[in-house]
Length: 195
Image (tube, rainbow, N blue to C red; front, side, top):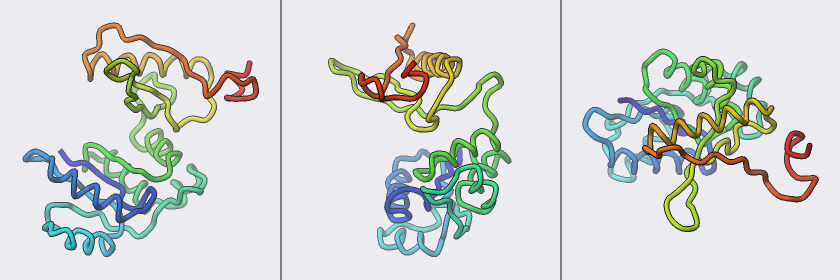
């Protein structure tokens, strides 16, 4: 399994992402490899400073990146050699098995929609995260940042996706599904939750 990582995206990149890749590399099993997408010239000194053999990683060289403030769709189209765009191209072509970035969330959504394509019937992908529960265990929350304004059918589908994720990945039988807003004040939330 090859896991692609955009080392140019996110706060404090590439230092934070390269250091994260080094830590993740230590936990990999035989046959698993991390492929770093970004500026190899910036990555190599960080890897060497930490006493790691640079050959434990594969590299896809690019100096181009999509900034956090850039318009996602335009940036993906106008920067086909950016670390995010190349990561999704490699994923689409089967050269890597997974791709991750702490960079521009919108660009990740666009990349997922147009390079990899969603599962048939899925209207929009969602970002999921585990959140701790008060008493014990955790819940799965989605969407946590990919979509600013969703129609009711998309929210319903997020519930189904989250439920399937909980059942198949964490073996939770009949998981509870709920809708959460960002506050109780009337002016908070998107158009749908204010209605």
